[in-house]
Structures are given as C-alpha cells and as structure tokens.
Length: 352
Image (tube, rainbow, N blue to C red; front, side):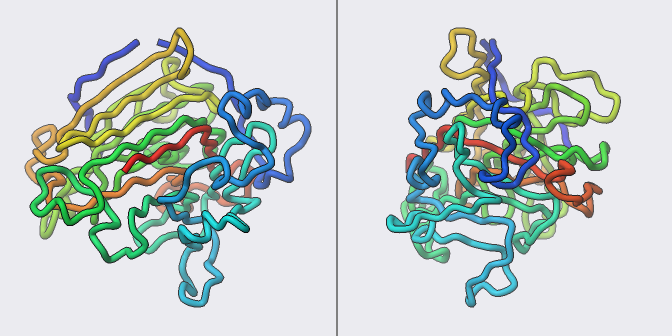
C-alpha cells in the first residue's frame, strides 16, 4: 500500500546527459555502438580510473557486498554470495565481478548489475548487487550499526546518526513485469535498513515505452510484534511520480536512463534530512529536500508506526532489483532480453 507523504519539499530546476541503457552483463562484453553512447569525459570529471576496480576508486572500507551468485565459501554454502570487507578491500587483489560488480571501462563508474532471478538473501525475493555498511567486523555487536539520538543507550552503537551521499545514474531497469506492481520496472538505489523494516528506500522506476523514469523515496512504517502485518510504505515523489500504471502519461519532470543525479542522506539527532539533485554541479540544477523525524512515529497518522527509536540502523547502496519472477511477474530470459537492472555510481561517500 502506498500513500502520499505530506513532508515538505524545496525545489530549484534541471537535466543532464549520460549513459544509455546497456544490455550486456560484463565490462568486457560491450559493443562499440554501446560504448559510443557513453561519455568518456566522466572518468576525468569524477576522478575515476577506468583501469582500477571499484575499491581502488571508491572508499569501500566500511562496506561489505552481496552479489547475485551462490556463495562458494564453505561457511556460506547454499547462501547468496557475500564479499566480506576484507575481501572487497584486499590491497593485493581487491574484489571485482565481471558480471555483477565492476568498473565501467569508459566512464570509470562503479557498476552494480542484478538479474530478475538469482540467489537472494533469506528474507527477500529480489536479487541484488548491493553494498551494506559495516561499522565493525562482527554482525552481532551493536557497534556494527548506528541509531538515532532518542534511542535508549544510544552510545552502545557504532554511531549516532550518519551521512551517506551518492552521485549515480540508473542505466537500465527491467522491461518485463506486472504494471499493477510497484516493484516491476524498478530498483532500489539507496537504503537505511533497521532490524526488520526500512525507514528509507530510494527507488527509481521507469515504465516500458517511457523516456523518463521516476525517483521517489519510501518510508516503511515500523509496525512491530502482532501488528507487524500492518507495516506499509509511504511514498514521496522526488522527480516524476510513484505508482504509475500502464497507460499513464510520461513523467516529463522525471529522470531518463543514464541521466546523472545525486542523493544525500544525513541523519542528525532524530531527523533524517534528504537532498536530491538533478543535474548536480550545473547552473540549472534542480534540488529537492525533505526532513522526517525517525523517532516520532505515526507518520501520516499511521497508528501502527512506532518510529525507529530504540532500533539499530545501517546504510545500503547499489542495485536492489525489485523485479522478480514471482510477485511482480517479471520474466528471466537473460540480460540480452532486458531482464535485469543496472546502476552506475560516480561518487559514494559514507561519513560515520
């Protein structure tokens, strides 16, 4: 269930050029025609080296990675591939995957690709190539996560508040799926996750046949215990419009595939401050800002929402493909058929 959030926004205006949707899985399997659609000046603009793997271009020292493969480590048999912090940032051989996580050979971007069907994490039907912030090495310790100021014993966590920002482009979203499902044709590109629910999911969604896609963010009400079944997302539009259905008008105020934009998530005290910029760094940029109190609860009058005080939180960034072959009825005919999502990051910063 999605309802419109009444959280205030501030606006300014813009557009940008960028990457065209690419239907290949690998940095080594790109046709010259597709390469011609990419802007080779982006590598210099964002100080990226096309010959280096992601952890050499970006500070990933506080992240681990999940990719949509079966894990080959004995201790994770039958589970999704998890690349530990030490593996991701190994100075002698930092991790890269030619299909799902690599450096774009033209732009230098950090590329996350995820198919419509693959190995998934236990509580999800959706494949992902995604970073998870790890403030410690041990999952079990509160020091691995952060919280908000109103949390009792907040000092036992790894941080109170935190700041993550990204500059990116969505290169491709699946062209198959059920128009009645918000997950079809969509991917989540940034998150704050809590113990069970998610106070923030930043979503890009573009309907087949549309030139423009939409960027919006969801606040998931934090229903707990016997009321957990009543949790739901409250959607707030940023660029374009959430919840579009087949036959809907083009969201011309939205963002095209390959168009570069940015998001900034800054949790200070109890307040989550969000800033989105279309055409960052240009004179005609468009900026939208939002604020929400994560401790207060009952957002939009929801009686089951308990807020996120006394809960642990962690950042995620990358490509959490919302298309699957079950609930969203997406097909899985391969990347050449367009059954995947792909996201390119030009900047990613975590300050905690």
